[in-house]
Length: 219
Image (cartoon, rainbow, N blue to C red; front, side):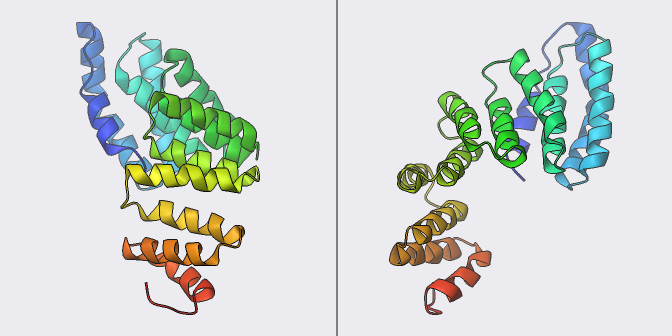
């Protein structure tokens, strides 16, 4: 589940505002956990309805509880996941109006540009904004690589993902993505090496590529 649990833990324990705001934040804890459970179970439409309720309560009460920010972000993520990109973009934009340094707001905007509009140049700019805030944001880094590849900048994409792999050499997804780009530029040997590494790190879905590209060799 992408980038959820650690951040939610921090945000749920960060209500340090006036007493009334603290009480409201605390009272909404069970509703938030229920919405989060639906989000993590990919019941996005149900999650959106529950986040709507939380956001409306907090906004009407003029409360700054961090549950509001988190709910806004997760509602945007849920909308993005069901393809409601225009509405999702609105939520991510609101996040950035609240805090212009919210890296996930920029990632969300990048995802909407990439998947919703096929505007890869705009997506790249948003992902790079997120990377400026946190150079190790996996979602932003992978988004940047995919945007570069879509823009026909395959060599730059390989160069950048190689740098990203150096941050975490045990992420099977990154080797798989690099393999796809290497294969595209006819580096079959390099693609096979990365496919084998991806499989060794647990990406069993890469086995089909191994069979297609690498003469059924073992990883």
